[in-house]
Amino acid sequence: MTSKADWPVIGSPVDHESDKRLFFDQHEWETIEAATARIIPTDHDPGAREAGVVRFIDRYLSGIDYIYAAADGSGFLKIEGKEANAWRERIAEMQEKYREGIRKLEEISREKFGASFKDLSEAQQDEVLVAISGRPKPQPITLTTEGEQNTFLQGVFDEGLDFFSALVLHTRQGFYCDPVYGGNKDYVGWRVIGFLGPKSLADTNTCKYSVKEYYVQNYDWADLIPHLREKQGE
Image 1 (tube, rainbow, N blue to C red):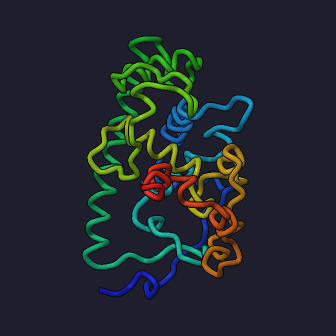
Image 2: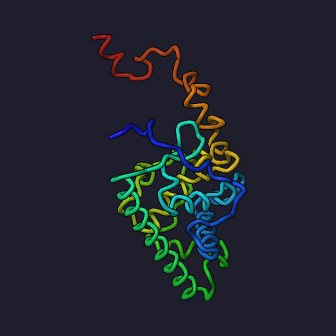
Image 3: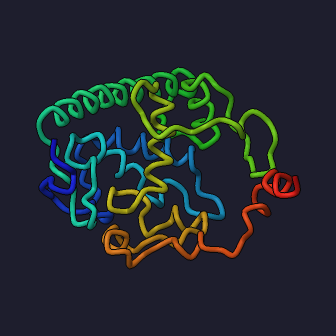
């Protein structure tokens, strides 16, 4: 098995200015864009719509050409052989999950409100998403919020997820991903959380960008891990 470092590079970074659809049709694009905009809404900060999350999802679902970005950010790695077959199967399953999920969104929207999901008010869209998720709408939380919702570990793998769970995961990924994948347009996701980030993947590959300054500190480990100080005193 060859290292990914030896895989050929194809294509180029996703063009953030292009609204060309590779998987979704126009209606599906607008529906998913509206849904992601309710998962990470626009408020005093940009949301999923401004970050171009729908473009990220469209490219991801289009096949296997946008899975692994090249280390220098110049394009994407060409996947071949058994791994390509495994990815094609996985993406095909996710494509069907999205198509069925969009059909279900439309069905619920028309039953409840007599209109397409993308044309509903934000409050109505939230009701539809609650219905399709089978869970109540989450409330805003902070790092100091106590309770079960702050202990849930958010995964990064979409295999086996239902449509809504996959959509939420992909919305987060598209909002916070490296822009090479088509989301996080103009670094809006990073700016929201105060992450400066590299200007390109090439900067991380050449070590022009580093997080070293954030980790090299003059701390005594005992200050960070109290039980070590207790052991020092024994």
